[in-house]
Length: 466
Image 1 (spheres, rainbow, N blue to C red):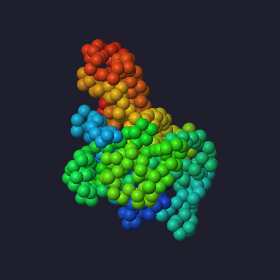
Image 2: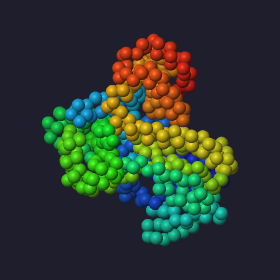
Image 3: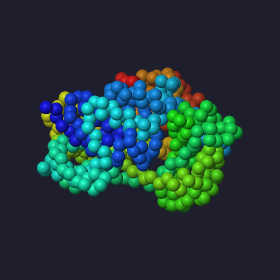
Image 4: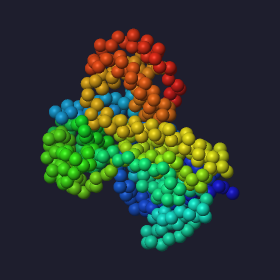
């Protein structure tokens, strides 16, 4: 008889994990508090598009879904940086079009994953919220949309129910998990640039858009302004999702000082004058969309022996500034499914080993995501940062076996996040030493720099591109 696993949460990570477990012979039931998005429409409540990179793609390849997902995605070659005076320039993510990231619709991806999991034999139960977990009796209580409750046996339960995880709350009440939530102090609000057909032709000409897009479609657009920023990601039908990141409280500009669209419009006219005309529904977007919070979640323990485990954002939610939250969660699913397939009868050991493998990596990407916020909103326009970036590119070209930019390690390889974090730090120290405060990469003796690199740092391990 197939071993049974109960999953709480049918979002991206839950659906992908369920499909992989079913494919390995497990009987899987998934309980999701929201209605089925394929029937009711997607009501995610969070950002409507996400950045898919190599780690997430590799998980989708293993699930046989990568090609289907990429058909519904928009390629982004790099960051298109927009200055206050209206100029823009592309900073490539990788060396060429083999190293790009992809903008994907959260809703469309979720529905594709649900279909794939159901085809693999997973049973989904929508409109079912976790109300209570009795870990001693190995039973959980669920409540449906009408308030009707029922209890079911759940000897092995896995929580993939996101940053506000109900299973985590139940586990923490039973046996404290060492939970720590660090608020970023900044928040976000989403706006929208419509397809080009909804805008005047002269706006499109000025903004660099083409075809159905109001802006260059194959880029992640950033308007860096020091302590805050806007970004825009393309959607397949031609629109862009714009996200404004600001301090939540404090002096202007903050969400506390921009309480309504009239105040926000004056702020945009001053700080984002080229962006504002591309958002014709600015007032209704700004006043109608909620302010989202940004925090990092840390837990000392992710599991209760072999009875319950947390995965993805339920275990290690991070801020979105490296575009790795979904990718990290998808990487989780590959590791966990493989471990469970190897030792299906020893979930206590599997859950412990899963945390041992993944926690140092989730801690590392949490730290890098926080650092990347500063980079995106400030450093991308800083001459010294740009000099380090240019020198790093020269070293990567001359000595690719010894140097790869940290962003490329995180985004385009399968090297552990923890390795990329430490190697990136060591490389940054070397770049600082070579530049000696200069903002001109061409002032560095490149032959001597390569010699110093090879003498200072060991060769990179197998990069394992997809």
